[in-house]
Amino acid sequence: MIAADQLTYDYPGKRALDQVTFSLAPTSITALVGPNGAGKTTLLRCIAGLDEPYSGSIAVAGIDVLRRPRDAHRQIGYLPDHFGLYAELTVRQCLLYAGRARGLDSAALDARMRDVAAQLDIADKLQDKAGSLSRGQRQRLAIAQAIIHRPRVLLLDEPASGLDPESRAALSGLMRRLRDEGMTLIVSSHILAELEAYCTGMLVLQHGRVVEHRVLEHSSRADATREIRLRLSRPVSGLRELLTQRGVTISSHDTQGARFSMSGGDDALSSLLQSLLAAGLPVCEFTLEETSLQDVYLKAVEDHRVQP
Ligand code: ATP
Image (tube, rainbow, N blue to C red; front, side, top):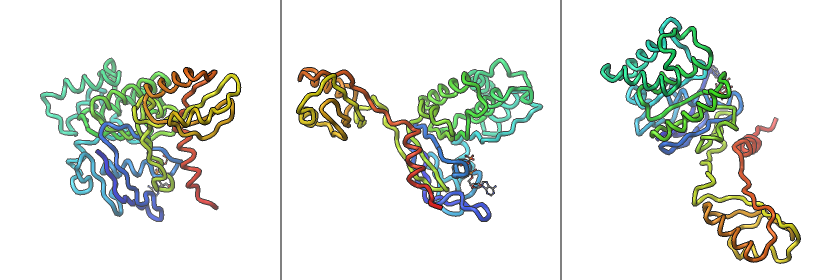
């Protein structure tokens, strides 16, 4: 749904993107992360067709963004990190204006305006001026403006900044719903714990380069490889053999426990545990070791740190 190929972008005297290449599947939600100055905003602006790269190409829904920017804009919603609203317009006028500017036909516009206002929980603010809204309400109006034309791709630059905890939780829910409706999202943020709740992939930028691109494995997926920690209440000789016979890959072990990985979904896990109990093992702990976004991120950034 989104493909960048060898994207390079230069500011005067500064290379912000360096041969960035990746592709994102439809209905994925990708966390775009990286240290300050890594190039996240620049990348989002290039995908949105607002900045023209020095070289390389970008396609959104099969449309070449550089060659057909107008067509691409119909498929893209974009929330910049610093967005502006027309302070003297009411929320209703802002949404109608955004819809018209993005080519919605006037017959459908009013109903669609009410839909997005309800979706973003600002339906009771339709008659208020944008300039009178709180930071969080302004953020929600800006997101409503970005999705009013039902884009297939939504780019959000730091969407949770300035939101209270309740609004952040609501935003997570909204992203999942938009994805369920068929949208593909990229979300730039520094709040990894929140991204973890809804992202299906992570793209790490550092010094303008992609240093990690990972599809996150969700533990219920049948083909996922999971790390498991096993602990026994007393030592058992031959634990290693018992485990390897059951097709797992052991990373460490002693007579009273082991860490190992195995592939398969929840059914495979359940069968393994039953089989270990049936073999008489005094299992007192059988735990999934989840790798967090934070772990993957910190490792990627550390591995690519430029030595002084
Ligand atoms: P942050 O997490 O701080 O928002 P970012 O990952 O979004 O950072 P960018 O804003 O894309 O990073 O900036 C990438 C690099 O380009 C930085 O080194 C920045 O200093 C530089 N840069 C950004 N905008 C300009 C500009 N208008 N002129 C010159 N250099 C710029």
